[in-house]
Amino acid sequence: MKIYLDTANLGEIREAARWGILSGVTTNPSLMARETGADFKETIQEIAALVDGPISAETVSEDADGMVQEGIEYATWHHNVIIKVPSTTDGLEAVSRLGRRGIRCNVTLCFSTSQALMAALAGAFVVSPFIGRLDDLSQDGMELIREIAAVFEQNSEIRTRILAASIRHPRHVVEAALAGAHIATCPFKVLKKGMRHPLTDKGMASFLADWRAREVDMALAGASSG
Ligand code: E4P
Image (cartoon, rainbow, N blue to C red; front, side):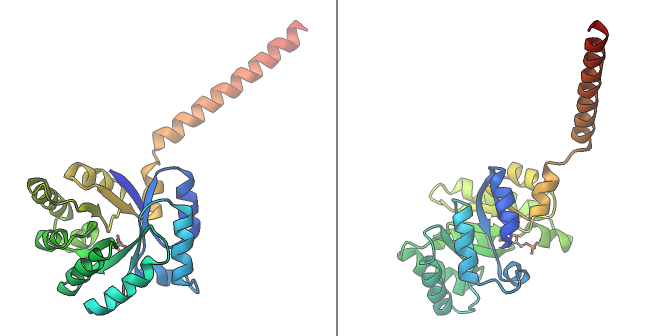
């Protein structure tokens, strides 16, 4: 299981990159819109300078011609840029056409196994099932990951990776890994929460308190023997 960061915020990417766990970054138009005033191309290039792995940049056209045109341009920004296109028939066409030019795609907004299968057959590099948005509708996002993983497993010619997206909490990451996802793209706050545990905090506090008490004892012992 690989971890990508799901953000366009350079501060978050810089910090998570220092932890040494990041294999890529995904952005989308909503995440970009949160970075007020930031230039899209410059942001993607700065991200690519921070993380050595696939960086997803999403197209905003609704037709295949527009997606292909955007994709060709984004691909010139950095060799690690992956073109994000929606799970639509135009998206499939864009994946096929960009693939013929050696440009890799992330098929996003995937909510069904049939979408994932067709994205894979079109040659998608990754497909992004959105777990959290399905859970929000009382559907089982993790079951979708399991089903896609089973289909891909049975069809050994499929090379497309499953990128679990719309991750809401650390347990989603663990369950996605168990369900067969190859990658999980996580908001920064989910990554931070994934390393928090009250027993770790409690353990650290008691280890440090014991160490300080030992130093005081040693200082007192030194003072009385001198
Ligand atoms: C993935 O590539 C998307 O950017 C993201 O995971 C969407 O998540 P959301 O449902 O929290 O917006």
